[in-house]
Image (cartoon, rainbow, N blue to C red; front, side):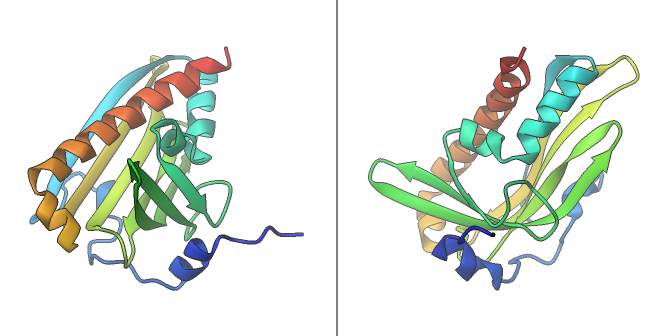
Length: 183
């Protein structure tokens, strides 16, 4: 028996991506004409830390841990899944519909990228990636490119960039907490 999807998610299932550079967060160089962000944090060491971090990442726990609401078409980040990421500022709720455009599922790297759909206040893509190196050091990276696309985001100007940077920091902290919580 499948669960009933929230109406916002059902609406977003048919929405199209709002930018042409789909999958570009997987590349070394991000596309021109966007604001670029890339932040990494050392999570810890060892395969258990990697596995805990990856499980939290792939289950939308990072977004929720950052204080955002998530309405999603699946319980985990999988190719073509739709996730409405909701930011509440006081009584105002801003929804950002996204579609998972890539999933990385390798022995030493796990994560996903999602891109903005119609109705998102910005256009662009964001990558969330957990990796473990040969020395068993686990890192978490958030990488994105975005530009303002709605009247609200245009009016917000530099405040939007500050809010985005704070959310990225909250993602990093949420992953650190999730990876060490189960120990």
